[in-house]
Picture 1: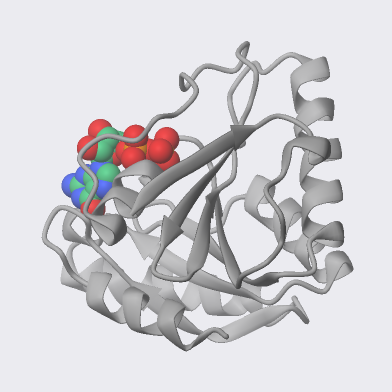
Picture 2: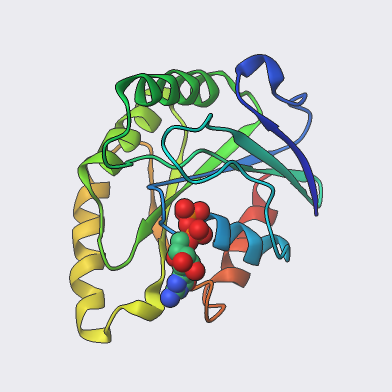
Length: 189
Ligand code: GDP
């Protein structure tokens, strides 16, 4: 894989000349770790994980596709200006990117779907971007809790027309689900 670029505005996007898959999720959901696991990279060039910093969209080349790391959301105490900037960029990107094939919406398996996740699901609906939910950190969840969280997520997804019904369950720590995710990515033409 190659790091292609980090962009802060629509004008900076690379040409949309290949299938593109984006990754969205609350900050700390395990997005960077998951993208590292998928690409085999050890470290990602990325903006610091703090709400005051400029939020970048990072593009990575994987085979003949782009993996797109969207800035995390749901920071506690994020300044209004930062939230508004994030919303404007997300709206523009999700509704304006012709090569975008699917969004992976990452949800921490311990926490399930939160109101901020519902907000981005609604945005994905309005943008007509199919999104597939990816559970992260499944290694942190007891088998007895797993079904409850899965049910909560399935109930939430049923309200969203852009939701792809099949979930992917992952642990970047243990390597669970990584091959499944790679296989899905490779089928998106
Ligand atoms: P991001 O803010 O979404 O990019 O989150 P990071 O990838 O930086 O991960 C946040 C924290 O969760 C880090 O401490 C990671 O080591 C941890 N983490 C990420 N994935 C997993 C996982 O699959 N299992 C466990 N146990 N921890 C994880």
